[in-house]
Image: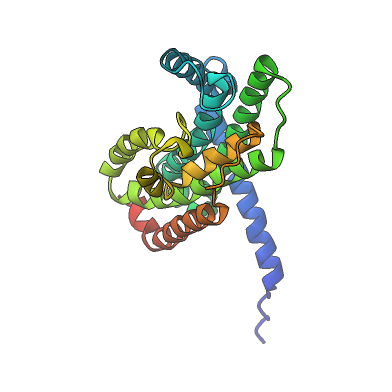
Length: 270
């Protein structure tokens, strides 16, 4: 008489898969931190010092050309409120896009999936970039003018939207980076003018109407507008559309997930 085979309930299987995902993502995050920050002097501190240095150098340079910022009295604070959310989007879009190449050797193990690699880089990136934003902007506010009335809701929305667009674009980049090596160079080139048309150095309202109609479709323009609304109580940023930014991020993310599901094995074997 044959012995009945053991049955695994769907609930137990789902719980095991969730726990396996948690372990894989946690291990990948620790590996990422050790690789990226553990081999350089200062370690994790460079995550803060690098953007701080960029803001100081670029902000000082532009302040020599533009004496009075479009908002407030400090060009450094104005520049930082645009530079940091743009940097969060740019870094996430690039880091998530390169996660397959970074974790390629581990993805041949059944316990690790491409979704784990994406989640690990996204979670670490969001935590790091959020910490950088909090430290730098808090320091600037306390140093320049501690009387600023903050709209915390707008600031949190800006950070969340920057993360959402970074994830959506990053998922799409996973496919494009994996299938077309040249896309990495193209992406790097495209982000240079993107920096100039995302409201880092100017206000949307100061542009001619014909240019406003084009810039509105840049989702990061809405993200920087929200961040500035959070720091300047007199600035309304009425053009901002949260629903448009979420739609843009959702479409990019959906395409990325569908294409990764179709081509992830092809990418791994390239």
